Amino acid sequence: MGAMYKALTTVMIAALAVAITPAPPTAAATTAPTPAPVRTPPPQIYHIVTRPLCAELHEHIAPTVGMMLENDKILKESPKLFSEYNRDSLNGVDNSASNSNGAQGGVLLNNSNTMNASQNMTVLKMENMVSPLANNIIAMRKLLDSPALVNGTGNVDDDKQLAAIRATLLKAIADQSASLDIVNGFVQTQQMGDLQHAGEEYIAAMNQPDTTNQPQSGIATPNPLLQSSNQAGLPPDPYAVDLANVPGLTLGYNPTTRLRDAVKWTIQQTANNENDASKDILASAAICSGQASPAP
Image 1 (cartoon, helix red, strand yellow):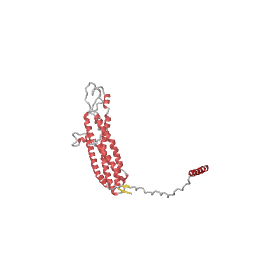
Image 2 (cartoon, helix red, strand yellow):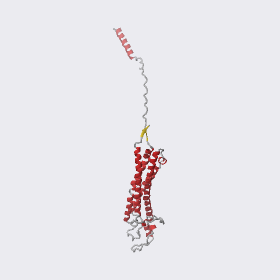
Image 3 (cartoon, one colour):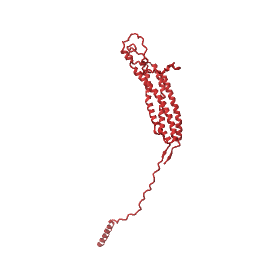
Image 4 (tube, helix red, strand yellow):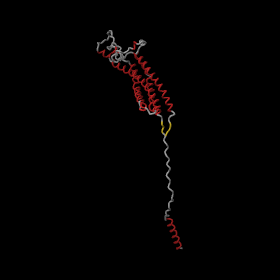
């Protein structure tokens, strides 16, 4: 029995040894190499090829038209401001130099031709129009002086159409520039005249005795060169035509009214040239709407 137990134990130990012994490594299954993915060509990129006419319409003509319309909106207010300036003159002279005793208190308040507060505000509104108008005019001329518009694009038909559009737009810009000159000239003249005559009442108060409670004597006729703000201190032109003597202008003549009528005329001329330019621009835009074609 003991021998049998020993034999059984020996068999179990041998079996355990066989179980613990690691199995010999098996050869890895051999597989074929994975083929590289087939590279597909990138999608073909298309470029939009347009006529030179269409490119110039987009890059230079359209921005010019936008700024021109902006100037039209600003200039539209100028005739109304000239009329307001005339109405403001009814408010009288600036009495800021008077004292509590009024004209008999030592400061003579003759018509010094300085602008009153209402006129100053109107001139300020007109002055605020000058810079935007001038900046737009400078920018428009720069756009229309691009090499393609000035020297041509190489396409004879397109160059002919672009030259016609450019010429008409330049005429409209010249009309807007004339409107700007009228507005800015009026502003500068009124401000210079106001500066020249400002403070004359103070000088009069220092150079003459106190007139308090004394009747005023006759006042000499003022020198128009020194009193009229329209002159702004400049000597009159001996060859200038006095518009007040022109038949039909004698009654109710007012230089500000003439400036208002002049700026109305330049605004109308601008509109006429803009209408002519719009015909060419719309015709060219119609051509371009069907000209853009994809090409590799």
